Image (cartoon, rainbow, N blue to C red; front, side):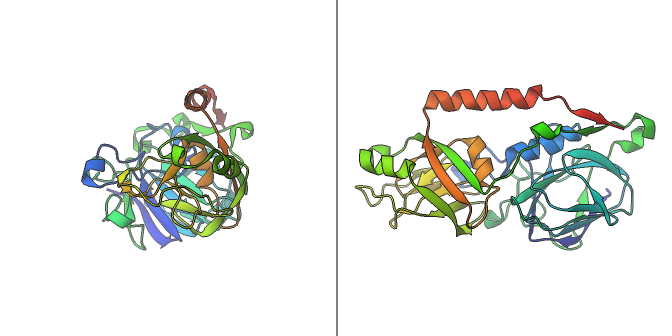
Length: 318
């Protein structure tokens, strides 16, 4: 089956679907898109199911050669995107033809972009998902990041349509996320929060942190005021998406998609999923602040987030 040939794999390009669930008992983490909102918009712009496979491009550098005529969409961090050397805007779908060269430059704002193709990529799932987790050598193509000369087969639907029947879509500019070097992480107090004094919690929520040089899809280690607790460690337990670990040095670690499934550091709480996606678009030196939120308010924000996504009307392109 034809699709795309990887001419240059870039810094880190990964096959991702919505994530691998139900395999924690096997020690397999979720994986999936670090920025779920941008991932979902890429698929929606292509008319795909929201769980359809896409490519997550970190920082940039990916170059693909199309083997077929198809419709693609690119969302996320503002990486300079060109087709055969011509600049192409993000947050919209457009046609490419067999032989076209799709190139991503390097972004100076944000970290991750997403490329979806109409009909989806045709990748065999492992343990119920195609999400790539390199540490576990699972998902994607041979459990690894994309490499030069990889073939990415896709289920193009253009062969069944006349050109004039193909609809292309644009996300209104007002709905396009703006990626900032400063983010607020709404955090639910949970796990071992009672092991942190009232003073420590107030200081934690009133301190500014910076993203350290240690950040990846597993988690973001932050630099700033050390957080103190009255315990050094706990029995290992399951770790949720967004959990805020406090290791021995007191510097918070926010755990993301490729986190380990269990761990023994005390955790002061968990960051809501929408803000984890915003954090995943940050890089070294960006500023982070935590803000407490109740479970009920977090639930309300999640449903408002989902409903807003569903209500947005795409604009048909000529």
